[in-house]
Length: 149
Image (tube, rainbow, N blue to C red; front, top):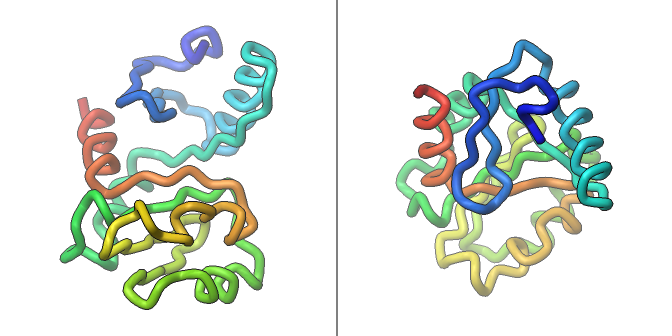
């Protein structure tokens, strides 16, 4: 499907919606095109969050929780900036041991005691009020590595 839209060097990483493409198009254009194509092909709307290789590398480099377990430190890629109440809503649900850092359209969370029992992890997009896709920093590092090939 992505190749049919004219994207080059199309690749995926694990079965969780990680799509790697090369294109001169702006991320917002890619988001719209992919979301529309998914709706047309599969019959349901899916929000798409796109970040460039440089943006991903910068996010990994700026990880505020480098000491955290890479499978428990996540980055939520929001499809739009969070509203003014997002920080308060997240703080009201996050456990004491869950550190959260907002960075524009991205949000880092250190689930120091794991994601399995976290109320924040279970409903993150609903709590923050913005559709998102979430990857741990281990997966983020692998995606960046694949982008470099």
